[in-house]
Image 1 (cartoon, rainbow, N blue to C red):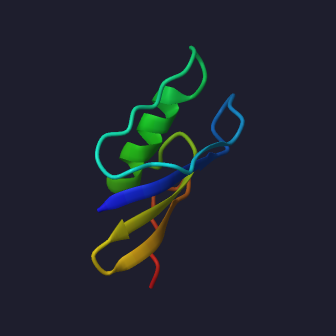
Image 2 (image 1 turned 180 degrees about the vertical axis):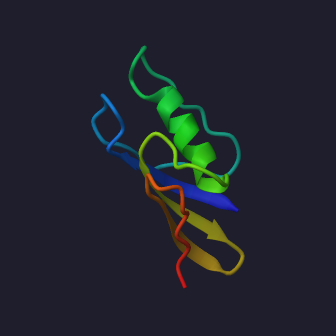
Length: 83
């Protein structure tokens, strides 16, 4: 599975964040303090975890063997997979 892009909305104290150019393998996200790095990591983890939603509404485009899918994780904790 490859996460092609990651988008956060409604994160407390942050403007919407987007990373459109994620590549297969390891990606490094860096920036100054309070720029959203930890929020992005928690949001990414919340996409694949059960339980309460993460710090923001998270949308990711994921590519795997059967195609490309959009994952949406709202604040209520339910990851919405396309039908």
